[in-house]
Image (cartoon, rainbow, N blue to C red; front, side, top):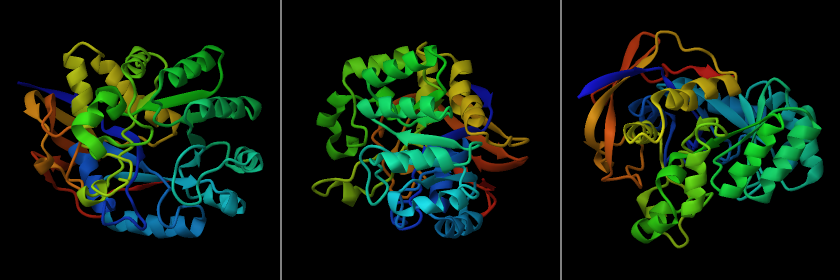
Amino acid sequence: MSELLLPGLIDVHTHLRVPGGEHKEDFATGTAAALAGGVTMVLGMPNTSPPITTAAVMDDVHQLIARDAVCDVGMFGGASTADIAHLPTLGTKAKALKIYLNDTFGKLRVDEVPTLVQCFKTWPRDKMIAMHAEKQSVAVGIALATVYERPVHFCHISRKEEIELIADAKMRGLPVTCEVAPHHLFLGAADYERLGAFADMRPILGTPDDVAALWAHLGDTVDCIATDHAPHTIAEKQNDPPPPGVVGLETSLVLMLTAVRDNKISLERVIDLMHTNPRRIFDLPVQPDTQVTVETGNFTIRNADLKTKVGWTPFDGREVAARVRRVVLRGATVFEDGAVLAAAGSGQIII
């Protein structure tokens, strides 16, 4: 066994369930899970209850981050037709804007052209617009980036047709970036038979051709690995229908380092995808004196070892080639040998 020293990783797509879903996750457990996965900065999504579509809701969320978080947290604001007038003030408190063109819950689905136009015209130009866009909706996002000459980031790209369209857009110099989630790289539609509802997510798992296309574009078109960490309790997953989503903060790095061992990707490229590019794309601050020590060898992902509140992962029992041994954040050891050592509220708010 040997050790690797990595920078603190950044996950730009997490659902920490605050406010309204604290029985699934909260800022204490979600950021503890992040540290256990070698992640020292996360961006949280706005599809909460209530959704984060106004500065007032964001202020409440920031108070909870300041009280509970053990790693650094920035929050997305949400686009909503009902609250479109709040975008300018929300933009002073959110790190980025999330627009849902496809499936979501509550009032965050945007399918009206006037609302989309207002988002692109009024959201601060120095802050990213990210989109949940699937299939033909990706073309809508690319068109908006082109018309309004501002960057767009595509979340959890999962299909061959989507990644090839983004690759073509990039070849033409259009201002688009994208992320891929580990579950779309390491699981596929065939895993539904084994995992059932515990593999149900949005976007749904892809075909072998989809998975192969994502891997083929991981060296160029894909900009970030982001988990779409979306916890639901075991009891909720056993409902009919089950809510879509799986956790990922604690497994993303070790899965990607297993791919390094298997010569599917280089270590340098993993660092680009999980640290360098996310920080550049979202204009995130440097974390001084921050590093992650990883032990390489043969290890097994176990539900019992997880810090996430829901306590399960679709990768339970999977053999991996590494484990996170230690995390140092701003000079303080915040995680070591399975234990979270950071004080509640020691994480910083990123705006």
